[in-house]
Every structure is written in structure tokens, then in C-alpha cells.
Image (cartoon, rainbow, N blue to C red; front, side, top):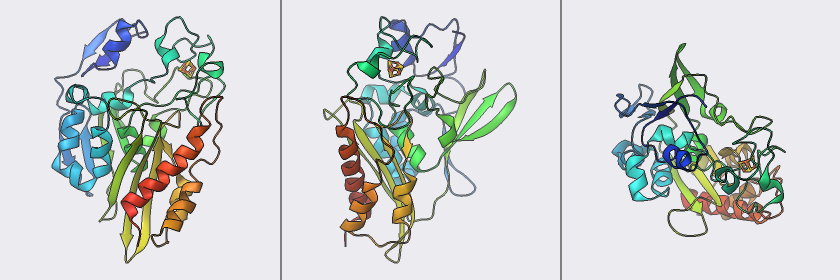
Length: 306
Ligand code: SF4
């Protein structure tokens, strides 16, 4: 493996200790001027790649404009890790699949062509959507689910200059190349994540369901943002975590909500569409029902009931 950028180091150093990652060179980027949160000309928000998770969660603009982002960050990891880990590093973090971290196990993501121990192994926490025969690991980030829901954009800088990539295209489903997690080109660096302006007021929030209350990755999660005017839902942004190989946008749920009025029946009907296309494994069929209930509950929390 060639060089890697390092900032907070909260994932990469762990993986190096376990010899899962063995970069030849580490480039410390922590002194780069990428630590600002700014409101864009169009009224969106740009979060520098080196903003710490705790700083982003506490930032007044993030809290007021996009509480779903603050909540997703605050429900991630431990306070100590949130004080070190950066936004860029968070969306770059690698899967928590136990076989990926066990160098004696077959894992196509760690070692292409070696197989996937999770397919026939213990796969309770693995993905039910976006999977392939090569890999069924979930993406572990909470805030990435909020970014996916809000249709954020990742800004990159590389040898060929700057470019922006839609969040939906930045993280890659495993397909036949599960070793590639992001659509980064050689030498590219994340400089910021931009959340576009959405109609206001935008009510939003993040719900995470996990085996224990703290320092745990999601079994399921839901990021919801709604713009309601005159009692009618004019904009709906919904994504799920813990179920996909990438943060899983739910366009069928969104479409069902647009133009409707809040009601318990609406939340239930919309959430029924959350698990379309799911392909459960031997131990994670329960995630289908859990996902629907998670989405329904978060729609009700954000949208309320008349
Ligand atoms: Fe490796 Fe993916 Fe299989 Fe886990 S699910 S063992 S990360 S190939």
C-alpha cells in the first residue's frame, strides 16, 4: 500500500496496529487550513475536512441549520474520539466488519480475491442493501448518513486540481472491487463537505438504534429532514444507516411524503418502503423490520402527528 494522509488518526492508527493497513508513507495533514465552518453564498454550509467531530457538532450554524448533523455526530464514538477525529476522516473510516479486522480471516476488502468470511459466518450486523457476492459489510459512519440524506457534496483537491463529487457518488458500493471504498483519485485529499441550502424552516434529526447506549455502531439508523409549509410536506430528505454498504438514501420514502400532510398513517406507509430491495443474510433478517420501525419513529419525531 502506498502513502496515506493522516489527521486525527483514530481509525488509521488502530488499523495499522492490527496490520490491516500497512502504508509505506504517512503524510500528516493536521496543520492544513481546513478547520472552518462557513455559510455558503447560497445559504448552505461548508464544513472543513479537518474540523473535529466535536467542533462540528457544537457549531451554532450546524446546530441551528442542520440538527441532524449535530445529532449524528454526538451519537458517534466516545467524547475522547470526537475530540480527535475529523469530519474528513469520519467519512473515510473503514468498515467495522470483524473479519476485515482479523488478518487471519478471508476478506475481499482487505485482500482482494481472498473470499468473504462474513457470507457464511456470523453476519448479524452486516448489510441488507447494496451488497454483492464479494462483500456485505456496512459503512460505519453516522454523520455520512446525515450527509447522504441532505445530498451533500464532497470537495476534493488533487494533482489535477479541485473537483466536487456528489456524496451519493463518493462512497462506493462493493460490487466486484470491495477494496475501493471511495471514488478518490491518486493523491486526492478531501478539503470540505458542503451541505446545500434547503428550503427553511427545515426540521431534522437523527435516530440510532444499537445494541448498547454508548460507543456502539448502529444496527439501524435514520436521518430525516422535512420542510413543511401550510401543513403540507414540500421537501423530504431521508437516509438510513447500519443497513447498507454505503449510507442508504430512501427515495421511495421521500416520494411518498411529498405533497402529503403529517399523520401517523403517512409515517407508517412511507416507512413500509424503507426496506425495498433488501437481501438479508442468515443472521440479519431482523434488520428489515427494525429499519422500517426506525424510519417510522424518526419521521414521527421530526414531523410530529396532528
Ligand atoms: Fe471482508 Fe466485506 Fe466480507 Fe467483511 S463483508 S469479510 S469486509 S469482504
